[in-house]
Length: 288
Image (cartoon, rainbow, N blue to C red; front, side, top):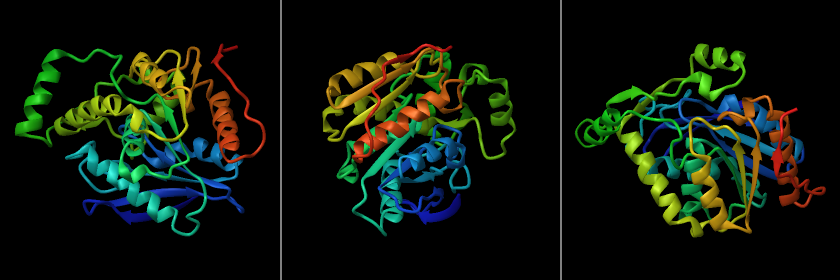
């Protein structure tokens, strides 16, 4: 793994990590979830490497080693534009290589909006891992109302994201690692929240603007975001979308007990898209 930096669309200094192969046949750009950062997706990067793809994981603004208030973005469009800058940077040496974008949770929403934008033209495929379109967890009404008011009046007001680690990870060691990692955080600002909601609505309204194949990898027991909302979107995009649901898995799929299966599916899907090997079609996994 090697680090790099770039200047984002609004002048933010953005950090990214790279996992490279000797003779790449493609590249995968990885976008993390809320409160995380790129290095935590090393397993996904290695799965991409197994498909002969270089992998690059961005620390989005307000996350990890990148600049910006923790958990804040004035507009979701700015975050999406950062992805375009990121793609230009890491793809400048070999622009002919097929490019894929992988996003988890909030990073999945950013991926959808990127693929729906002019910046996302020419992308070979997208991988959506438990993407945020709606919540499955309950949020107090007072908190939602406060968020709407603060987004207009005090947009940088930060609150705890309300996600319980026991609903995010099945493995206790993953909860401990997330809690003790100095680069993770639990913050989200009022403006960031309203921008995510607005972006999710637009992602559904503009679903047909996506012009590339998609792989949806969904936890079977996601207690954070709504898998039902994602399935409705995927059905609208059929037959260019493929959905795999992993029975019993929690929100952080690549850190779940079923992660080896999910990562193997990622490798096989990438291999199929770049003309390597035979794609292993899967539907639902039952945990052994």
